[in-house]
Image (cartoon, rainbow, N blue to C red):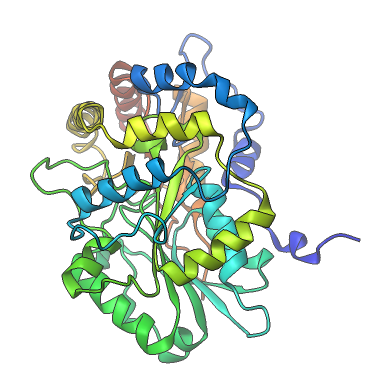
Length: 399
């Protein structure tokens, strides 16, 4: 016997993409360029590798689930600096918990929070990161999808959500800047959502793993902690944020992130994690301290992405309906043909891989909000991104 909820899990987008491209024969003289997977390709900070190497003797030490006080203090201090949280509001011992990347944490958090005895909903944007859906199904909740359409700035229209949905909601997932849209949830909207969470007693789980990829150095985008600070919400009640070093610091292989917010929720989540068996290795924690304490490499990282967006948009904007996002490293262009057809033909003719938007979304009431779009991840080096854009332009001119 197996957990029957496993049968409800949908194929991952990349499984569907492999099936779509199977049998296509791209020109051998054109090297493959992948804009499909959101895996950072910029160089990892050397000082983080040095911190790892300097602490390998810690391989002989069992880590604790709660993590080193020094790591939690470094994270709390970073949150204060980055999101304008007043000093002392974030108690590193109660409001912060290290995790092995946001993917693992988002899934586990859902298992810990959902009350299976109620007919609960886990509400998420649509399109969305597929972990939200899988985590909901395996926790015994029903996913509920809010479309992210161009007419609403690629954010859900939260004002249009019926009260009965909020009443059944147990977790509201946010992703800001969004995957795949790059859209930012405005501060005023975050404040409204906190009021709704209070009214209907649900948890806001803000996936902010792209928060450090933005364009204006003078205006870092706000997050859920910013909204708590603006509201004087010192207890962060019903609010939990998820952050990672993967995109911020080009360290996807380190598997290092954190959750922060409501102390009561984190206390229960810590209990769950103690049984879950997912403590972060001590040498990883020590290397993570070094990463969270440095912003120089993060600014340099943003500059690289800014350069790529500028170059690629110069090439694509005249031939494709595409806009610069608020943040993240994705483009979310509208395609002149069905998105899966665009993806397969582009691969077959130009050896460039993108992801159909419909693979990242669910059809609700006959509408798939990702249909007619593709996701392009500008993670490859500048020259490759430029070449990919030129190939896409050539493809469109001869489509």
